[in-house]
Length: 185
Image (tube, rainbow, N blue to C red; front, side, top):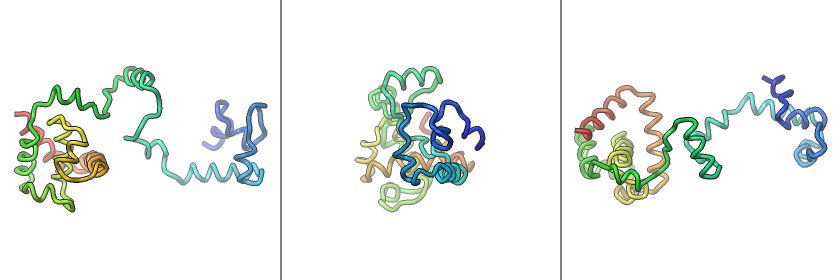
């Protein structure tokens, strides 16, 4: 991988570690952090690549920085349905009342409203309720925040963690699908 990285023609990296190929390149500021030592810079970059998490993995599920037309075009080419909040569209197709979502989750997880809404509740029922309120009741995250009395980031993080938990835990996934099935009837 190092050889590929060091010689990749569309990268400025070779300019930093060898010599500048292009007159428009301004390398002094970056190399200045390494006292102009290209070898130190190379070691820093390559060690960082070898021993760090993939930054693209860290960025999954976060924002895309681009204008709306570009994003729409990319989603169309990839045949992907956007996953960001579209409350007006979801309200138009919402079929389940929020109260029914909560009652179904409480029944399937043998808990009560107070437990699910409790600030320190740690079980999966709360995250599942948030996800199903979002997907089946057409609520946006702000509405879920108001209903459950928690902050916005709690809803966002809980829903994201739930996706990881469902991928790793078949038993939980079956319980989640059982709640979905009950709501679909």
